[in-house]
Image (cartoon, rainbow, N blue to C red):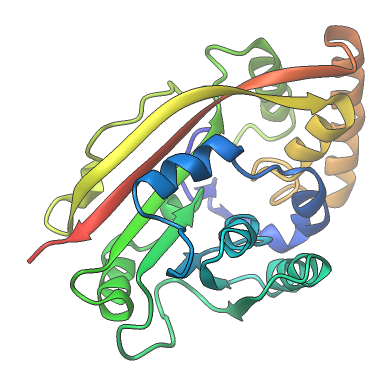
Length: 263
């Protein structure tokens, strides 16, 4: 999944439509990701963390398990409802709010760090940086991250992407090169990169869980009509039955950048 582009052919993604599959089948980053973030001072015990565009609260819940004090926001009411349910099921103390990252409700420094996983591409970056400067304070830090399969290195991902394109030719995220720059172009004049990491890890799936993961992607469940999602899923099931065993792995590239505000 290429982390680029917020719309496909002018059609906005409606992540609320994917909440059920998102919660069940869209895995968060592996344990190694959180360990590396903690080494960079993100998500540690006692820290006040703001998770932007939290989705179903994957990062927010893990930070809470690690002892952080977490508030998470998302523009989708359906996603927030699911996130609250999942946190309650684990008896995790996470505060959730509905709203865009470009308009945060706090008026003064309230958090130590902020995170934005698999979502920074959708934001008006200068506006969000301005909001974060206010709610984090001048010494605050924030991290953006991605957890993306690598179709040029993984045959299962490549075949699945070809099928997605057959149903949704406007999907713009296929054939990601895997390139992760040390210094993203958007930072110019806004923030400084103070640390970063990138590495690969094979992620285990079953045929069912990979189907659910792909239904929850932008090119399928978030944009296609329900009948086309159903037709795609049937074709995907047939493809997987022909080409992979019941359990398999898909290679993912995991990256994160930690930023500080410019003086």
